[in-house]
Image (cartoon, rainbow, N blue to C red; front, side):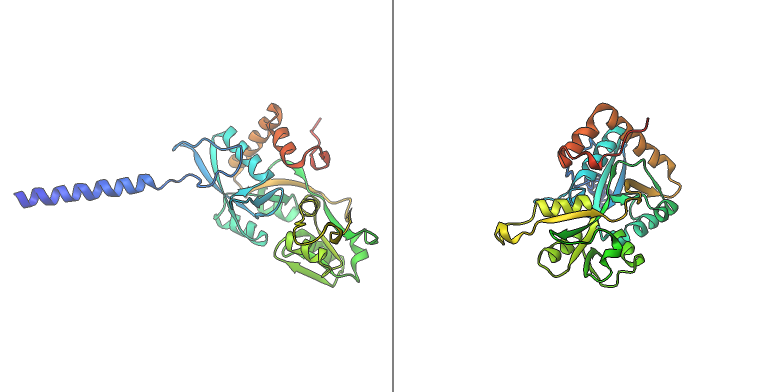
Length: 283
């Protein structure tokens, strides 16, 4: 009898340890990288958000290695408003929509243009900013459009919209890099003649260029030119095709943030008084 009681007691102890272990494994985000931190309860839905953390000021890793940026602050504030939580994970831009389709991510937030092929395979939110694509050249350069680059060496991010645009324009000497920053620095060093990519990201890199490794005179003056004025440059969040409930929450949250002034505060934090990236309000 004593032996039976001892066995039962051991089993109860093991069960208690198991339950304690499960409870201590949080299903909520381990990263709270922005000022708009979501208050989490066990009843809240939690979503994994795919991003490309090489796209400042939209998405990047800060000095502590946390994913930060305009997209991150905005989606965290939307989540807080709508009662869900989010956890950001970075991967290569070229694989984001495949990972969304497979269910690895439930939301994408990565300065994503509302291109037709993306709208066909996902639900995209109302646009929350503009992201025009530009050619960046050194002062005195003459390239303004993609056709002006046909005999030039041009740096781009691998798998980006600009890379596709250059190919379609017949530009043959395209040099892909793993990030916009890598393409930009190759341009600054003179390894490529021009760099093409998102205007906000290229502008951010140039204004934050590391002057410790070179004197100010070594940093060239540059210009940018929007290479396709007719391009749809709206950016939006994306979820799996058919998930109208989640995209509805995101849209409702975005609308609420614009109404209460939170959107304006987040926008100003990252872009200051440059209103060129704002989407005009519907009348």
